[in-house]
Amino acid sequence: MGASPSIYGVYDRNERLVLILSDEPGEFNFARLPEDDLEVPCAFATLQCFAEGHEGDLLAILKASADLEGFLARLAEAGYRVRPGRPKVGGLARL
Image (cartoon, one colour):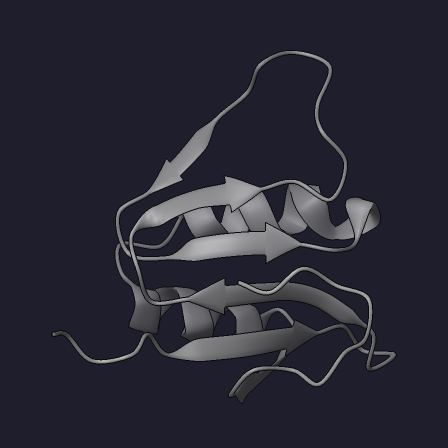
């Protein structure tokens, strides 16, 4: 049996949770389903966005990243706060 995935919470400058991600390959899940059937696969993470207004920025950072470490570093450079561990939030689906 493999190790448990690493989970991270990503927060904007106002400390609002905008993204939860795990280090398992998967896809970027939008806060609101796009009108077209858009899928954004990711070889190094599974991501759930919670802030529609940040999706464009988060997707651009994701596309510019080759691996999880690079993605986390780019998020920090863009002003997002990355915290390891599962965020304690109520009413949100678990990743």
